[in-house]
Length: 316
Image 1 (cartoon, one colour):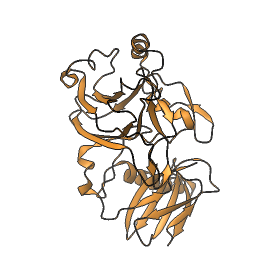
Image 2 (cartoon, rainbow, N blue to C red):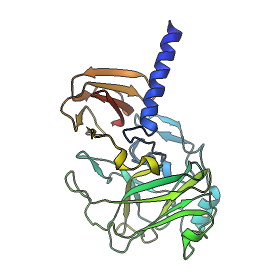
Image 3 (cartoon, one colour):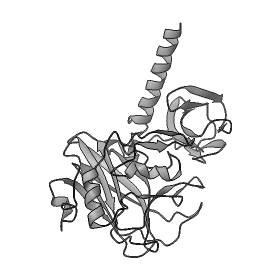
Image 4 (cartoon, rainbow, N blue to C red):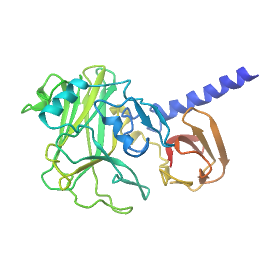
């Protein structure tokens, strides 16, 4: 009996993840960028997701120290040494509390305040496949631009990205210059001061490196802010494929009660741990209370009119 139950749970979780991570008729697709929201780890440790030499351990939302999931994927010490010599020893992005607002709640983000800062993340992709990249950014001074590079290999210096035409370089799949995100205001729950930039590219290899810099971000008066980075397959990113039902969870992140917006009646809400364990199920309600649950990342399955949508939820 236990074996049957285990297999049933495994099937349920596999099906749940297939909804969350794979594009379906509802337009859901996997964001390949790790911690693009800057909210999945404890405080300043969020910046480890874009450190070219990640530390071996990291703190989760409960404050527990665990093995870093990033160190196992990349550790570019050669590039770090180059940046140290050319710009200075602080190459990791800052983690900041001044991220975007989601459903009225302020979230964390990333920040550059020195020209040595970089965002670096190595990602497995499929060669020949078209991808869509998106980033929210804000520069607090005019003339402070951001350069986004999609590399097809791990560089050891910045010769290719320093070229007059970076996009023509063999190890650069795409180059995008953000020049239109100036806004001196940090924004509010009702005013968004971030600018969203998106572009498509075709991967030329089985991996890409998202590489971001802002050489004009030299001090606290010329900072740049980033949030909500996304990399998905282009054929699943179009809003034309989205379900006619537009569902949102708010506030997210949350400390207690989460509401389901966009529909009048929700048939079923299921709360899962990130490991696939069903924690709670509620019927005929548009809210769920997480006040008695541990901080961390959860999956919320919402069923409306026999349609199933899944979203990530962060409990603080």
